[in-house]
Amino acid sequence: MDVSENDLPYYHYGLVTVLETASVQLFCIFWTAFRNQLTDYLIFYIIFLLMRKYGGGFHFRDFLPCFITSILSLLGILELLQYIRLEILPCTLISSLSLLFIFLIAPVPSIAEDFTTEELRIRKYKLLHIIWIMEVFIIFLAFIKQKHLLHLFMITLLFTSSIMVAGKIPIFYYFFFIDTATTEIYTLTLHDALPI
Image (tube, rainbow, N blue to C red; front, side, top):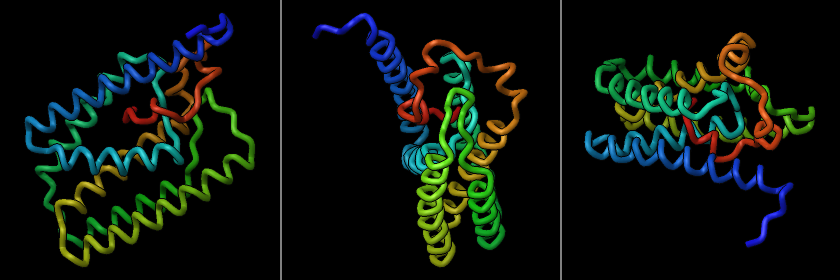
């Protein structure tokens, strides 16, 4: 394949993004399979990925802090899941309020993204649909008294909310994000698969 000199940064960025994302996901899959939490991880990942895709949030500038924070966040969330003992009603309320909070503050573009008002409106509209589907699912889980999945939804939504709040605070970007040449081609793609 013959790649022009001008296109090399795009190919390099794409390859690095795929490798970074794959390394985090493979580590998480192996670790959670070893701990018999693979199903929890996959549910967390799907919920988080949907919210992150349209809700946005904070991004690190480099892979290593992103990798370390992603792994520690995921392991912490799955560990915390084992100790939560909330009843169904408080868990349902916290999950629903988290969804409302996410809707109110989203979308949160990273510092490298420059969306038009129309693009932000479209993201918010798509996020609203996802939120309604999740809310129906949360109510269903409460109805069938599925505490474990409700706890997983609650923790995932609280975590997603915190990343969005961090994305709204400029001081985080001052310490953790520097606009480099690769951020010019940044879009919400595979990098959003990483929790941080």
